[in-house]
Length: 117
Length: 109
Image 1 (cartoon, chains in turn green, brown):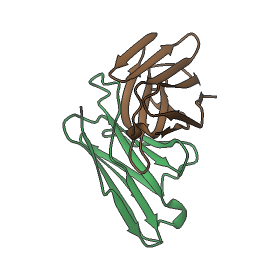
Image 2 (image 1 turned 90 degrees about the horizontal axis):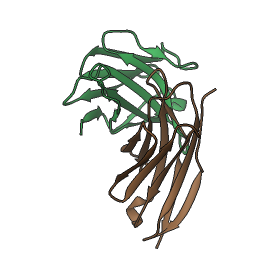
Image 3 (image 1 turned 90 degrees about the vertical axis):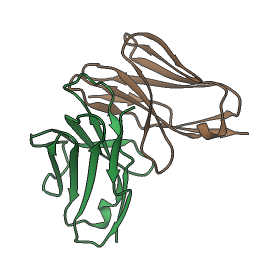
């Protein structure tokens, strides 16, 4: 199956700093990328959807100035958590889909566990 | 609103069969997915149903009834490694995935 590589898998940062998470599709064109956040014992919460070359569409309640998403190429999307605080500690997961190629399944990255201290 | 319901937790015995149900109400339907998620890891794809009926893939099968807004995931010959959360997700009319809260499956020897 298609491979999505997410990096880093774990990151610890100090409160007030920014953290960038990368999501790469290795063998297909990720025309659409989804960024999720997962709280302990809860389902995945969609944060935003981005189509290559366009601004991301954020879900209600997600601060777009805090969670910066860039999808400048067909194989790379980044999520930057700016001025991180301990409440931003969570598991962040990206998924990618070749929407133009008729791909219905979304392939997931390995996830990034962010801890803000 | 959009809603996906699945049981919070189920327990089964190694070697047995378990069925995890999922009911949904969404704006539009472009398929239903089942994912397996082990603690601390990203979900992995198990199955995709867009037409009514049963899809069999090894020990795992998934069933869909669009008229009833209902699906189930059937796991046979349970193994200890099947202990995980199983997530039901529906792709809506905007091709976004709407997720259930997941069913934690506990396998006992």
